Amino acid sequence: MTDDADDKKHSAVSENALASRFPTAYTILFILIILVAALTWIIPAGQYDRAMNEEVGREVAVPGTYQMVDSNPQGFVDIMLAPTTGFYDPNSYIANAIDVALFVLFLGGFLGVMNATGAIDTGIRSAMRHLEGHEIWMIPILMTLFAVGGTTYGMAEETLAFYAILIPVMMAAGYDSITGVAIILIGAGIGVLGSTINPFATVIASNAADIPFTDGIVLRFILLIGGLLICSAYVMHYAKRVKADPSRSVVAKQRKAQRRFFLGDREEGVHDATLNKTQIVALVIFALVFVVMIWGVSSQDWWMARMGALFMGAAIVIGIIARLGEKKLTGSFVDGARDLLGVALVVGLARGIVVIMDQGMIADTILHSAEMSLSGLPEVGFINLMFWIEVGMSFFVPSSSGLAVLSMPILAPLADFANVGRDLVVTAYQSANGLVNLINPTFAVVVGGLAIGRISYDRWIAFIWPLLLILTVFITAAISVATLI
Image (cartoon, helix red, strand yellow):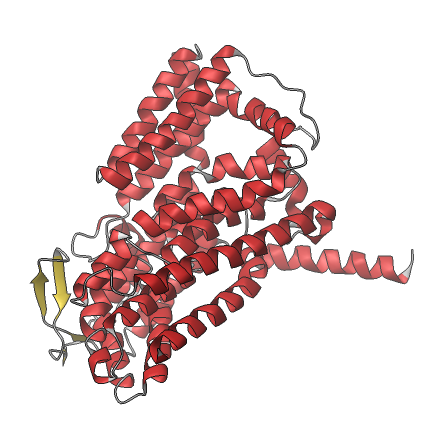
């Protein structure tokens, strides 16, 4: 064996050993709960007075009312209760997680029934036959569609429905699971980062900042279009590289296991599949379900309960049309739900971090420190520090609406003293939150999507960190120039 072969073998062994030692999403989140609990023993407790804001529809902090309060450090019992409380905490300014977790289980059941019909597997092979040679163009087209969802109505948890469908398509096209995850997570994420009319980010933040949500919309369109071009080019370049040389995939060591899970025994290039009439009807219903879901969320104020009911009802209809029988229908639904049980549990763990921070009453203290650090800065320094403050806060409060309600009433008025438009503060907030939520381990959409894709968190970071640097430079340059104009 040559020296080069020895080096490659040693490198492969080392990478496998490193991957096996890297903790799972569950461990990472539980460690973060412990770390935040430790901070409640160090950071002084404090609170702002709060008043109802009719425009936002929630209570918001009142500037100038911060005061120290008795500390409430979080101990062992609080840590153990945090994941459970995270599912249904009635006092949080962030939406409860139980409905998201149940939606994930209903989604898994729906996919289990679809898989039992064989329609998805056969449909993937048929699609690859028709797209052969042009698969790469699916990437920018699909990323644009997800970005539209992100910029208009804050598409986030809803994307969990698409991972199990798109990842097998990308793998059958010769790419890898990272490519499928990136199309969805980065596509919707860049839409949220460049939110234009997103009611859960731009509108709530603008109302809390006491400005029209259309203020600053030109800059947000620049961030949206420029960011989408950057991200599409990055994912396409990676996908081409992986297809030309699969060993260059960041998940190359898991390739065989992932192919067995997502594609079974089928090999790339095998397209000898024909859909029967029942499978065609199942796929039509399958597509209509997602159309109805998007319509319901974007125009009818649907949330997870109605979406879950939609997927459960569709599973029953498809099972009856495919003549699966009662036992196979219910068995397939339960098996599919079981496959996504880990994702549902992650939702509660991620919310547990916010629960600890709220109960320890350190969120307002962190916000007050940010308020003090922004005082007296010049325009460009002010808006860039604002961006980085929102980056830091986003790790603790991943919810775009939750972060807007928490931070905008306090931080937006400071822009008046720095001679900076409040719309720039809103843009800095939403771009920071959107950027962080591409990798945020406390964001259920990130850890959930990675769990569905069978991708460890360290492999995702290995893939995305150069893109994060590019986007950070792009965002800071954009808001700096806008401040000087």
